[in-house]
Length: 123
Image (cartoon, rainbow, N blue to C red; front, side, top):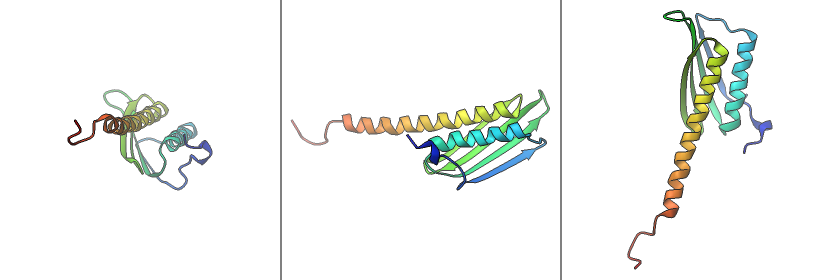
């Protein structure tokens, strides 16, 4: 596991776009918590783009869209919730789930290679 003291996104490019909404201090802290959680799992994050949009129809909601470019690949998540904090939390969970899925697929492929018999005439 990565050392939590090294988990930060200070060397990353973080872009925050807010459309029809202004974020308060608690919502901005939630962004920082999300970025810290992502930095703890992803070894090197190059760029994170957050887009926050307020929707009024059909129901009042906040939509958060995140695009992340890291050493392990590109990841993307979108969530629409009643407030920005829960939307950020939902997007962060989706990005972390994508990382787990990708890691499980990679490990599964390695395990399959180890269990296959050698190729050729061996009987």
